Amino acid sequence: MHELGIVFHIIKTIEDVAQEQRLTKVSKVVLEVGEVSTVIPELLESCWEWSCRRTPLMEGCRLEHLTIPAVTYCEDCKRTYETVKYAKICPYCHSERTFLQEGNEVRIREIEAE
Ligand SMILES: [Zn+2]
Image (cartoon, rainbow, N blue to C red; front, side, top):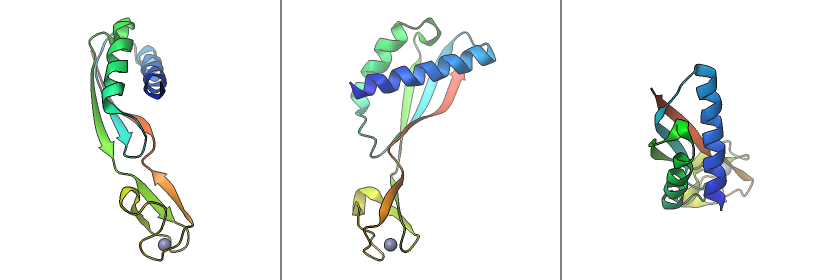
């Protein structure tokens, strides 16, 4: 399961931060989820609850996620556009020399700790 791997990775990152900053309890985590990241929020939440129950630092930790819009960059006209609306073809110059600039990753935006 894709989501479980992401959750493990996030919790590992938080554990490293907690160790560095001597945190004993994390109460809330806010994630940025890219629009085209293929993460299913419901699955992410159930993986989150499952993992938090097994990690003392994370017990009862709340999860919030914000959707980050996907942006594609066009190499020909050097402009950016909404990926979801136009996909791979640039709406300005109709070039196909485009690549996804952001929107396929899951990042930690905020950690609230005690
Ligand atoms: Zn273009």
